[in-house]
Length: 309
Image (spheres, rainbow, N blue to C red):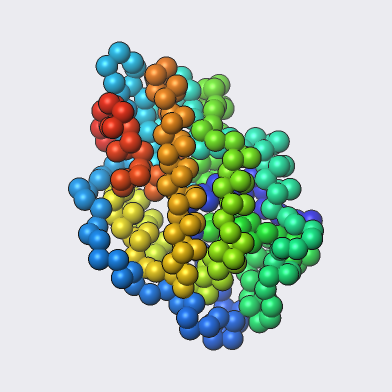
């Protein structure tokens, strides 16, 4: 059995940074109705504009902490302002701490020997396209056929590994090297449960949409990355809502489970770290903006949040 190593469980809230695939013509494996279309939602863009990836979070009587929005990118160095806030912190807090035992648990949960798995859910020619793509991620055919659908679309939601550390990995590694205590806002069991609780039919739809719209999603990912480097949080949220999938209910359930619900759970669990103060908290950038986002949630709890980078 061969599965990618330690970065397998990061970045689940965003299907992004996908590489193009040319093993089959789209018309052979995908039906026209699978094509994403511009959103018909007439709601205005996120307003006001939210600029900043590193936020100072403070309330009278407690030392300030820092909240940093991350994205699943492979990087070589941290921005100076981010690195300084991290090395001065008393505690590093991630979404989920993926230590060896957590990674082992996650990898076990990715596979299903009896149905449902990719073997039972997909037929040719789509199956060939899917398996060829997973092979680019280092997943052999035998293992790929045993993957649960949520495991497949989670793997496909990240760049093909190059060996460079991701931003999340670099942050956690830096904290551990500096002997900064590391904590998490949710357990790997809760993360897996959020994925398992997406209805199987919706998981299947998400796999098909992810494979059949790779070139379009790649363009969307480039737009997200551009806005990330410009520290444009509201722009990222607007880009993420730009297209409608073939199954709006599946897309909505995915967003609710992996973005909104997890944002609210993390908001509740931030309290002790913020009360203790001087924490460096690293959370996926799309959890920060919007009505369900952490920035507005923290302000509603009486915290002052100020962009510092």
